[in-house]
Image (cartoon, rainbow, N blue to C red; front, side, top):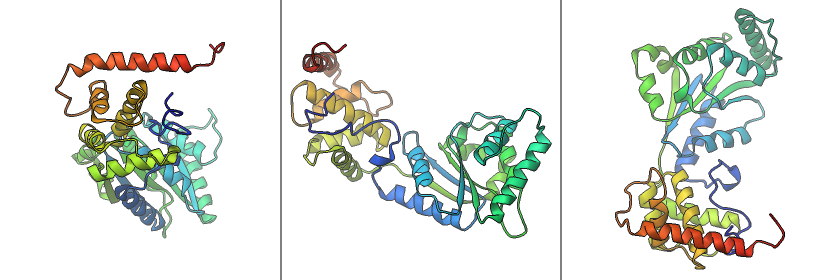
Amino acid sequence: MYQRHFQLQQLPFGLTPDTRFFVPLQQHQDVLAVLKTALNAGEGFIKVTGEVGSGKTLLCRLLLQQAGRDWQLAYLPDPCLTPLELRWALALELGLQYSGNIDPPQLLQLLQRQLMLLAAQGKKTIVLLDEAQALPDETLEALRLITNLETEQRKLLQVVLFGQPELNRRLATYRFRQLRQRITFSSHLKLMSAKQVSAYLQQRMTQAGTDKVVFRSAAIAAISRYSRGIPRLVNVLAHKALLLAYGEGLPVVCARHVRLAALDTEDVSPKPKTLWWYGLLGATIFSASVAVAACWPAGIP
């Protein structure tokens, strides 16, 4: 695509939570510090919330990578589970084997036995639940009941809930008052400031292979404004703006490219008002496609 044009070794603004491109912003570092402190202290429930695209899944993966030697981690990325499916997902993550002959009471006994075995080995069993706002009510309650498994000295299971702000509204209801009282640490992931967006863009470009200043200051300001500091939207706008600059054969990204990218991107706010730019968007992307095709080696489909 545009890697060679901007002297990049790889695409700098992918949408997958790639820990190689982690930018240690202060808010991410703060949340990681809270998580590690709480988990080392043996706290039962910990909650991390943040807007869509703010980097919660990336933090979850970083935590998986930076786990202590005495941590036994169970990562559950799919929240759409029934209570029984939750218990089985946890059991499989902890090394138990599935069997259709095991009924729910037996499964709970096996889970308790496995948790006690891990505790005897000096392990802290920690469940990381991503997209926790989508957990069914019955599954949330089942999760609370599982954490009742404990010895006289410690909890056998710790839980980290990663979720969108909707999770706070659900937990604030009367039904979940017991679970709410068990959350001992809670953090909210803040969005990026304009200054952080600038540092974020440059560091991602550096990590991708170039130290050149590709984004002009006006383009950075436009990305910060349209993205509202949401990392995922920053990535989308930056990627499209780079593609547009490449299509025009320019070495830098201008504010005009960002406006065009914003017109073609959902959830940006505010939308650019100069709608006549939209007509240029299709033509520019077409030019970029023609340029890519022209550079493609002959004979390769």
